[in-house]
Amino acid sequence: MKELMESWRKFSKKILTEEIALGGGKSQSAMSYQGSKEREEGEEDGKDSLAKAAKGTDGDLSEFGVVKIVDFLNSPEGKDPKVRAALRTGQEDAKAKDEVVAVNNEATPNVSGLKPTQNEISLSKSIGWPLSSYDTLKNIATGDPSGRGMRIVSSGDLVIDGHHRWSSIWSVNPQAAIDAVDVGLPGKNADQKLAVAQLAIAATIDPSSGDVPKATTGGAKDNILGSDAATIKDMITSLVGKKMDSGKPLLGDEYLETVKSSKEGKAYFGLEPNMSNEQARGIIIDKASNNLSNLPEPQGPERDYMPQFDGGDTHDKQVSLSNVVARMKAGDVNFKGPFKE
Image (cartoon, rainbow, N blue to C red; front, side, top):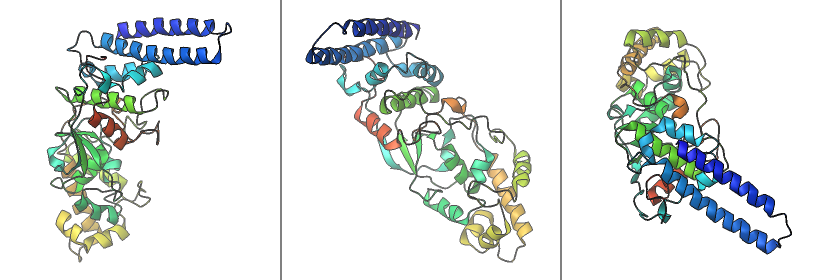
């Protein structure tokens, strides 16, 4: 990484010197040619820099892991548009197909068969919708609790993006399926797979966009990963009646009256129409807290380093899952050597 940063310092100084020299009366066509030539040279220099960065590995940038990759991509050198442009030239190197990633756009894995990669799961973001909105509870059976055609991103048995949609379903029915885009990310472990995902996002978003997208809600105070059922039960109880992201109160009386008489209430919680709201509320709390206490241990970094395929909180609508997936599927993401022809 040090060699990569030093290379870009030298390159930036070279370009600045050449740009100053252009002020000496060259024609517009000559300047246009020079600009085109500089862009080509910049892209080639970017490929050289990627190759230098991969030294000490088997020629694969993902071996650095997601934290080092994100730190680099967010550094002045890694944010240089020429580096970002070089990251999208995977089909132009000596092995045009070596970065092709298999994608299943219509995967429906079982929720309990997946493991989280981020190291925190918020309780309120997990139960806030299904335990306050009957429409969301109904949508659990469809594989998309949002009801908006949304899919999480998985890679084999790992959740890569969409953790709270996954945990929402888990809170109600861990045996249910979830709609997913399953991406065959290369890598020996979750750390390397997440690194490839971040490189793909950096290769897809505008080269001048700066830092890679991130979620700004890290450090959740209601993280439940690693908590036992009793602890989670107390946490849920403290939230009863409070307004959730749905705009409705958690386990409110109106919600309970509907759920008690529904097929979902019977199937997920064993509720009966003649139960009191207090009794039904206690049964749902017990079931959700037991379910969530069985969430698997995380295998990834803090949330700041997690891939945000939809732009996260910092780059809204500047990147999309479909575009990132298309680049990976085509083999455009230049993360593996040889980095040029």
